[in-house]
Every structure is written in structure tokens, then in C-alpha cells.
Length: 201
Image (cartoon, rainbow, N blue to C red):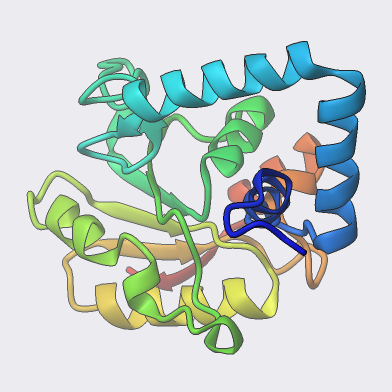
């Protein structure tokens, strides 16, 4: 008979909240941590608790950081008139590695996917609009993934932004269909930025 508060079952259920982790994978993780690496499990607990206390969203770009404004947004050497919109913080890392964008970023922290009940409210759109309304931004680069969800997000973004007095462009369509920025090599990513398609002057 299963106890009302089964610690093992709760651990497996918690691990299942991670992306792409099903029941079997969660079980393997739980058994490994409990049987072979309890010290590692303790480190995960400690670092996760610290992260939950210390990491917040940047007030300007919405990425994850430990200060009110992240290091990129506070860098005066960057072009503060050009804003690139990406899905996740990992996309910022990819772009910075490709060394093809010297402007700022806005991180949506999500995407539109009707099959998962993710609409525009699943992204940081309202915060993005507040950012653009400051009047500092003159060019917006939509750099969402070239997946069905990324393309849907790009379309909604364009419709929401087209009436602002900003130039709007999208990464080059030379990007492989179905690709995610996180997994594109730096050369291809840089080329997609340099050859970006203008949607609105």
C-alpha cells in the first residue's frame, strides 16, 4: 500500500516537470541520485534553492540574472537602438558566441503553441511593448526559431509591433526549416543576421 506522502513518488513527479522528461527518465534519475549520488543530490538541492532566491528577471530584457539590470543591458558600448527578440536566454548565448549582434536583446521566455495552451500571454509581450514605448529602439530584429511555434510567434510579434515607428526585420530564411537557434552553428547564425529580411522600414 502506497503511503499518502510517498517521498520517492514525489521526487519522481518533481523530476517529470523538467522538459522532455517522462516517467521512465524521472525514475532513472531518482534511483541514480538516491542509490549512487546522494552527495550530488544534495548539491542540486542547495544550488537550486540558492538560484530560486538570487535569480530574477532583468527589468529591461527579461532574461534571467542576479541583478535588476543584466550585464548586457547595462553595457554602454552596445547599440541601445537595436533590439533583437529571442525565445530563451540560451539564444542570447548563441548569438553572443556568433559575435553578429552588438545591440540589445529581449527574451520572451516562451513561445506560442496552441497545442500546449501557450498563447501570447505565455510570453513577455507586455513587457516588450513597454520597452519599445520608451522610444529608444529604432530597429527590431525578430530572431525566433524557424519551427512552427517560432514562426507563429514571429507572426504575432510583427502584428503587435508593426505600428511602432521602428524598422522590423526577421532572420534570413536561409536558416534550416525547423531549426532552433541554440543548435545552429555560429557561421550560419551570423549569416542569418547579416542577411536578415526587412519586414518594415
